[in-house]
Image 1 (tube, rainbow, N blue to C red):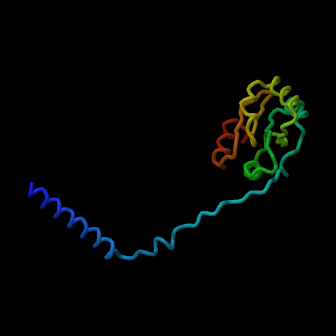
Image 2 (cartoon, rainbow, N blue to C red; image 1 turned 30 degrees about the vertical axis):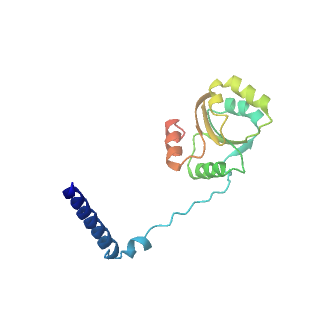
Image 3 (spheres, one colour; image 1 turned 90 degrees about the vertical axis):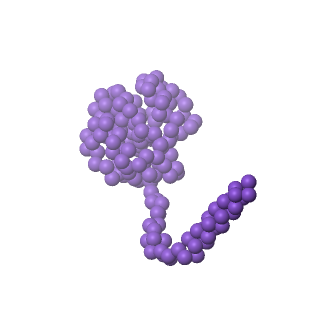
Length: 162
């Protein structure tokens, strides 16, 4: 038992010496701290200069009139909508007509009539912003929320918009 306490004491003393030596005699490497990149949050402005703003009631007729339609449904004041609108501006979309619809909570009749026409639309209308792609009067898919540029491009390639 006496040997156990002696071994424990020696182990404890050696551990403390190693800790103190590594703490006090550590070489100062300040270059790593100085070169650390500062991550800046990119701010986006709401811009739909590339799209036509329409009312929700007009959406069905616009979808029927055009072969390919891309609709951005969002709220101008939200940061996520600002981001998505800015990302869409940078993408060259030549094959589809682009519309923007301001999401309104009090317009339940228009939402209901749109969901009756396109039943899968109910999966996406709870989100703001959401990008909806229609082809030949059929809903191809939607991309909800604030997305990154890579995800947006993949979605637009998948829906054959770009």
